[in-house]
Structures are given as structure tokens and as C-alpha cells.
Length: 77
Image 1 (cartoon, rainbow, N blue to C red):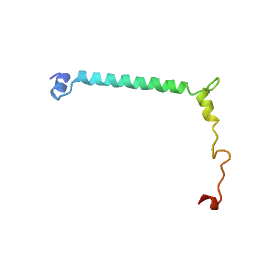
Image 2 (image 1 turned 45 degrees about the horizontal axis):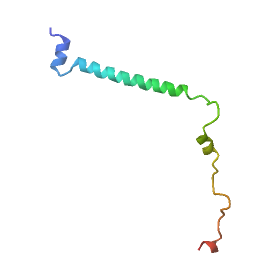
Image 3 (image 1 turned 120 degrees about the horizontal axis):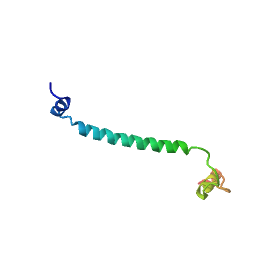
Image 4 (image 1 turned 90 degrees about the vertical axis):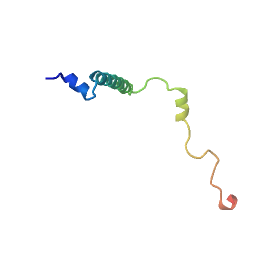
């Protein structure tokens, strides 16, 4: 009875190549898991003063600037 590895090689399957690819995929999956765990840990409420750029962004006023009103129809033309 022939060896199983010999049969796979006859069919064009290189077991070592398959193992190498699977190990590489496992490393990528482990890196993704670590990244997601870090994101999950950092989701708590932030402490301390917000950065200046964030403070400026939250103080922006919405809508029209002060003093701009709708002009009557006669003045628009």
C-alpha cells in the first residue's frame, strides 16, 4: 500500500506548502484578534481634558452665521 504523502504529491498537493500557508494565515488571524482586543479594551470613557482640536470642533455653531437673515423678494433680484 503506497504512503499517503506520496499519493498527495502525485496529485499535485505539497503538504509542506499547505502547512506553510496555513501557518501564515494563522499568524494573520492572531494579529487581527490582538488588534480587536486592543480596540475593545480602549472603548471605555476617556479621562482628562480633551485635545484642543476636539474642543474646537465641539464648540462650532450650527446653522447660519449671526446677522444673516432671509432677504425679501424685492432685494434678491
